[in-house]
Image (cartoon, rainbow, N blue to C red; front, side, top):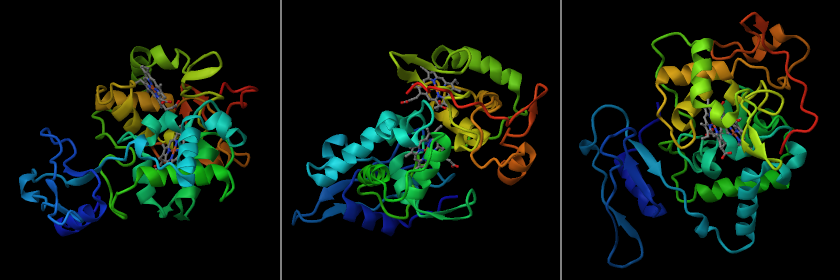
Length: 334
Ligand code: HEC
Ligand code: HEC
């Protein structure tokens, strides 16, 4: 669980930041509890009323809710130019970072609303989350290294070297979005949520039905997405132009959380938990580009990198062994 900030720490942080932070209880039907905010008589330091934890329901932990600054707050200077470049790369990863991209996705395909949307691993929360230890590569990762990972796997591309202008721009954009957020705090809506365990075991056939009725309209009956005039309108969910077998979205847990909170697009939280798990399992049971860590054996790659009930790599589904990988499309639609 996320550690609670003490009430006094919150007041201090709010006083320092002066940003639009409200204390919120996730899923609280009454909505976020706004903290009274006023300016002191001197007009210098903002004074913030003490949050009333007692007024919140006893169950669950209150979490800090954070609102990133609007685009209009991007400063009109050299740093602001870097922020704007980072935002443009996030939304138009190819062509702007083309040498590092090997599929039809963009960062914003999975980090919705240009990395702003809560429960879609927003960049403002990511900025506060690193450096952090990751079991995936067994060491402490900086934010830049974490972003490299999404290039290698989610974008089926190649990691820009540390210090590359693409990473500098993306990190500047993340820093801008996190402006005013308390360092070290965990914020409501950070990362992807995990839906409660389903009542029934995940099922491919039930997932296929959910896909047909709730997803195919946009992502295509074959899951390959749709493009118009060479521009991707709806991104592919599997196959040669999608994320590869090493990507975080290949974990059914991440996929179910993303899908439950965000899909169908703009109708988040309309699927039942069971439907989200089933359709995530269905999506993650299709071939996609090979895991770049593959060294020749599907069984060994599963053992080393995919040994989890949340991972279909190296599993047999409908008589087919998954993990052969797809040839990368000769010309991925950008
Ligand atoms: C196919 C979907 C997908 C795409 C495309 C994608 N990501 Fe991610 N990203 C994820 C998933 C899933 C996670 C969480 C993985 C985990 O928890 O293991 C993640 C995590 C992150 C994190 C860490 C977030 C946190 O709160 O810990 C950052 C930063 C990030 N991605 C940046 C990027 C950037 C930059 C790009 C574009 C170059 C990108 N991502 C493209 C799916 C994607
Ligand atoms: C109304 C159209 C629409 C529907 C219906 C829809 N999606 Fe999406 N989906 C999108 C769009 C658009 C994006 C990318 C957002 C962006 O780039 O800003 C997306 C992104 C995704 C992604 C991350 C990117 C990728 O290609 O892997 C996944 C996974 C996903 N959708 C799964 C689903 C599932 C599962 C369903 C059905 C439950 C579904 N979507 C229904 C429009 C839709």
